[in-house]
Length: 84
Image 1 (cartoon, rainbow, N blue to C red):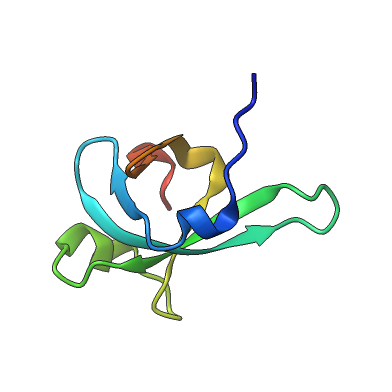
Image 2 (image 1 turned 45 degrees about the vertical axis):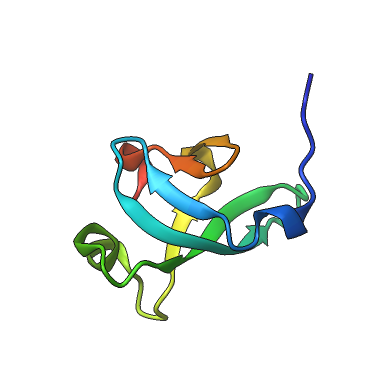
């Protein structure tokens, strides 16, 4: 059974990698106009995290493919291998 989550519940949720690195906080999602599905999530990086600073994009946000999302509960867990 698919569990639906209201987008407002995701904003501000802490994003961590599967091996425990704190990336930052969920800010927004990129939705495909063709399929209507989430293609990427946008994360505001944790400035204290050296790993987050390595993957930060030019616009200051971390863009993560939605396929990398492993779980969403109290935290959003991301598979580190799928982060560019």
